[in-house]
Length: 449
Image (cartoon, rainbow, N blue to C red; front, side):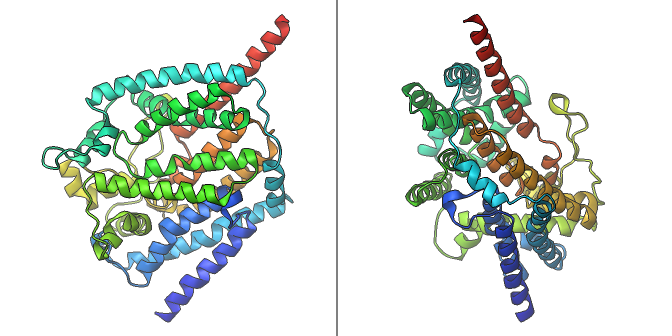
């Protein structure tokens, strides 16, 4: 027991030291993607994994295990991630002689360019109109406004949030990509663009557009009664503020954190969860969901593969790219069908996501898991290098803030989403298309003068 405790503490200490060397700011006023990944990794995986390794296995996911030794395999894999991920970034920066902290400081202290902001306004307004019209169709098809159900929850005997969540998530508006990309992704992203321009220009038109898009995004993020989506949505505003202004005051972070925490507890309460402030809440409420669930579902990968099912060998990768994509089996869905079959039967099952190494292991074993850690470390290094290399404009700041949260959130999901993700590709293409179109319009207007 003493050896295990020492290993947990030593692993955490070494990991924090390496993450700081890799460019993480422990202070939140200048937080970057490395810091954000560090905090989400420790909060959602390392703490829960460590507690389970030390013997605390009261969370329901650990009671599903076929072999309790799977917890050890999970923890050692998490420990390897804690060390190898930041170490990979450090080595890449050293080889390329990049002082990422200095470059990041220099970037965020630059003034952001808001050139062609008027053209951007009308373009964003046009895309927003399309997205909001489709959102109206989506709500009409649902038959009610989900946000109102959260504000004024109906009788539990007549309405099931779990069943409705699955029904709403399964709906198709013209095409599944139209719903997932144009409605669920683009509307919040457009609100980020509007916020960035509002922050820089302080013009009334941007304030009004942002207000509409913000309220619409709240509707979008609560449309399937999801809890985590509401929390992660406002985080991008924090990064936009830092990337444009150079830093953020602590009191703003305190207010944002309070709003996020309150939102989670309110949604839990409104969807029927009863807080008792005892051991039940520790393992089943928002605290248990944050600390234990990711670690527990990650453990199931080591419990299931290859003892019950052979490794997937990349079958979950999309067979064709983008709009013609067809996905094969994903480990998170397979685990839910096996360990959570009762939820599948009653129609309330989702997927069992965990840290990205879980899906990498489910596909290629420990070799795949190790390669995935090195791959993500390389990807993060490239992202930070590109971020600090590009010209600082309002749109680029909004893009990098969006990708910061997207990448960090994806680390707590599937590894295959780092190989191909229609959502991420569509966001990048939206920004690229807008930038190119605005440049073309600006050039044409200049030629006409």
